[in-house]
Image (tube, rainbow, N blue to C red):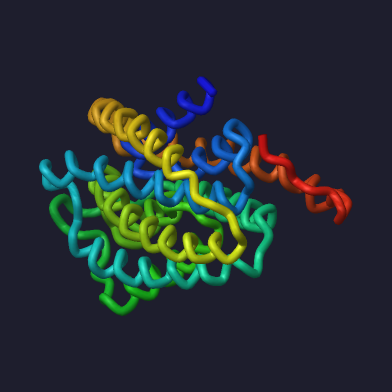
Length: 267
């Protein structure tokens, strides 16, 4: 179980350093190291990442490194979208959900590897209407609700490349949006799991959240020593590695599905 606790620390480290990546780690840790069923792991990851993100956003808020306008116009529609996406998740298998979010990770990595155009100091990169920002938030929310992750790997590119925020400001803003969306998605998943008679492991959620919070504070400290460009490229590289790993793990399950009579046994 020690590897699972190490994984919990890395989840928090990722969120504190990059403002994202937590759920990308949480789901595999819960599935492969703890032994949770895929659907249950997806739901529990939202609760864990939501708690870590909320606490991890506090230092950024104190340093005024959260763009509250983006939280409002991007985050609120994202909450609605995440709830809807979680509701739609009942029509997808856990394997299909993992394949979908792996594909999105790779797409986000390509976006993040693109060099950003320089903008005049002190001026915003884009003047986007609240309607467009809200539409982006809703769309990202639906997708992240379907794949069962906090959505930082989608929020960061949207804030940096579409919203024109510097990476340092985007990280704190992303954490706050992730927290709101994750709790909304988890709320819906609780009802979905109840219908499938899958009980939520609240003790596991609590332990992972506490360990992850400690890791997030460490990540926030390390983030101060790295440049925005380094964080951006490191984040993109991380997405490529994890995206390829998830694809390699789940594509064989689609090509060679287990017999219908086979029952998954939890240990």
